[in-house]
Amino acid sequence: MKHKKSLITEEKILEFCKIQKRKCAEISIFLNMNQNTVRAQYLYKMRKACKLERLKGSYYKTIA
Image 1 (spheres, rainbow, N blue to C red):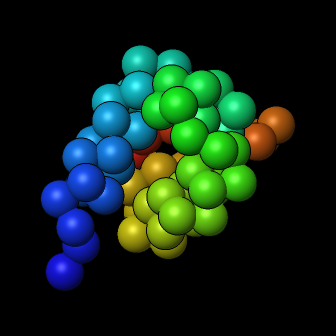
Image 2: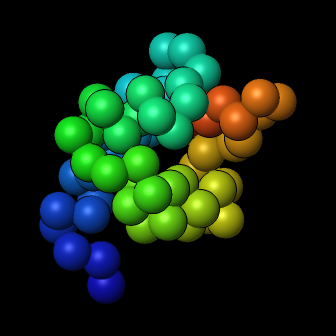
């Protein structure tokens, strides 16, 4: 089971990417986290779980 902090961070990412597409760098600045950590710990896993989609140009968008 995921830790509460991970779930909260995922929710923040989903909310941040819901309005418009965002780059990994923008997400990492928003979360105040290292870009590689965000990509490895959250973005890849969320894409695999079909919560996020990756668009052309390395942008991420919440799947509605």
